[in-house]
Image (cartoon, rainbow, N blue to C red):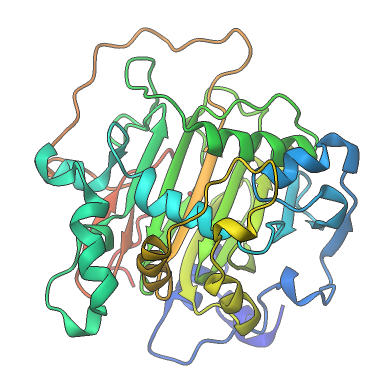
Length: 383
Ligand code: SIN
């Protein structure tokens, strides 16, 4: 570990928290010397290339969801983190545009649930895209006072909707999981050695350039033998992957647009966090300018072309933002939820206690609870 990051560990208590603050701080120029970058191709001391089984998914099935054939993926493991797999952008050129459009236009639609539902009547959150697109298409945020609903979006849940208050999923708060996202998740997890994955819940996190995500473990799923799948689009992030104890020092790594991570086996329940969003490097920024016109879609593709006017909105949004999707299988074979009383969606933020905050320095502060018994609260008071 380079001197700079090592120096923050002098007082060894809660090393994760100190490193989190080291990367989050804005009063000094950032020091990224210790950040592992899988995309640069330079094999860092801990990076180990992994050969995935190219026969696990047929080429046509990979291509149909916008993925390269598996033999062309660059996959890695990380020494000291068994079960952790990092795939450096396995998407075909132009196909990320489809997934970005789904995350911004389709998945926030009802009946899916989002942070805005907690504060606004249904009539306001019914058409987040429609109420934001015109404004975003024509005026950059510097030229406007008010934020669009899309810019206020912080999370969306799909499938079994995570209840931030009880930190549980339940049988009676479920809406159908999007079939395209399941097809993508099924194929990626199969390629990584987990055939038969059932996408039952997802959390989409929407990060502005000054957002962060606190230290937590995703443990509310009832079966942890299935991997946690993570997909990232837009600007890059520093991701911290820690150990099974909150105080274990984490490894910092860059996640760029299109990168995919799997946390499985002994890595399934590791503490992790996102202290900082960083601008995409030039070569990845170019990927973000591609959009999937009908002519660039491969034959047999399940993806629809993104309309040019939709892409104008998406590309403006992701110039300064990042979207992360984590897909989870909640139940094991034959497993069911324990009996619970019917839940009601809380429509006010009163009485919500924080697991952690994802916060924008511009005052657009938002709070959320996570599936973590040992979550760490990251807020203005502490940082
Ligand atoms: C990420 O944004 O990369 C991580 C999201 C999460 O841990 O839920």
